[in-house]
Length: 251
Image (cartoon, rainbow, N blue to C red; front, side, top):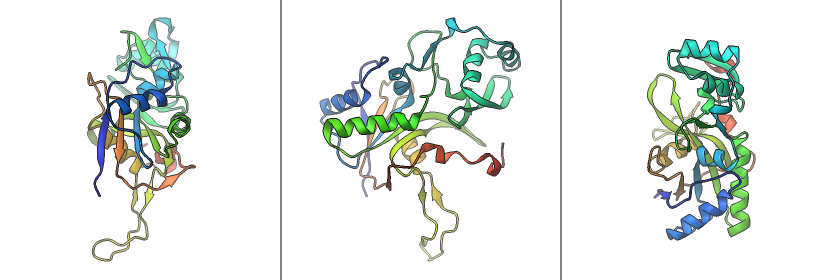
């Protein structure tokens, strides 16, 4: 199997209301990369959030008393804390410089995924898309409408990991593929039957795409993954990747 990971370059700065699918198609075709059946598009959440107007200017935010208290404990901007809390179900952990929350979408991550990078303006932040799975489906459906191609779409974000240093991209939204490949019942090289193996392929693909998707000044917010045979699904959701709290040994 030969798998290619290709960055889509030349996308403009994304603004509220932009047709992301159309812009991705145009940019890829200018590179000679016409999108094909079976391709996987990994799209950085930041351009999805900008297209969906999930942008907030902290100058417009008045922190609550709770946000002020959390700000004093963590050392974070109280306006940012207010935005984070407004987009969270619960605070999971706090420390100096650290605020881990459970987002309204169910993900556990730093600052509810609120991002200050790659958005214009010193006091401007981007929230996660309100429904990243829906965002992925919309891009997927629009590509099929415009080009007739059946693709999978992953919306990615950068998360830390328990007990591991550094950050990697993970899937926060998906459409067109099963986010977990269930390997239980398969045999390994020596004939042993796999008992617990379930591979989080959507996270693997999001992380692989990060090799070409820029986190800083590269300006490459989309990658095409080509040649990977994935299990197709119209029902799977990135929320399946979140371990149920009652099964989480590190709550």
